[in-house]
Amino acid sequence: MTGDRRPPTRHVVVMGVSGAGKTTVARGISELAELVFAEADEFHPPANVARMRAGIPLDDAARWPWLRDLAAWMAGRHAEGVSTVLACSALKRSYRDALRQGPPSVEFVHLAGPAELIRARMTGRVGHYMPASLLDSQRATLEDLTPDEPGVVLDVAVTPEELVVAAVDRLGLPRRTFVGTGSPGDADGRPRGTMAQ
Image (cartoon, rainbow, N blue to C red):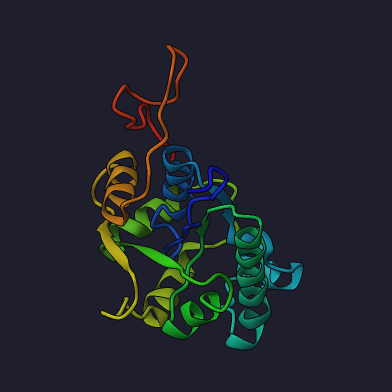
């Protein structure tokens, strides 16, 4: 047995409508399971950002180049032997299929919850370009994971810390082993502290 064989890479997309907590949970998964994090919103070209800031939903023509860029980013990390976690709406099955054109395997964590709870979170956010008025459009676009799509569905009514631990455990991701008193988690590897929404 060779000693330099790398473990297989894992590529996780935390999906759901805006305001569900994708970025917070994806960052938590990144820290707990040592996956490289990326925020899909940062891959949008300025024209897409301007449309969303103005409350205009993106059409598929605006989404496809963005989705291809995200798939290429994951494929590039896979080629480097690096596991990733991406915060991305991935609302439609076709969008998720596009993401799966990148690395050999992509798993999804769908953060789901009632519109009232998510709308309240969106209204309370500061500095995000996605207005709460687009939530109805996103919910209308959303297509749930189908049985042939690898992933889990988690209820956003629980805390972000609980969502992170549930995602890592249910996907079977290896947990970071923290050492020393300055570690970012408890002795059992669970993240501690409060994550911002």
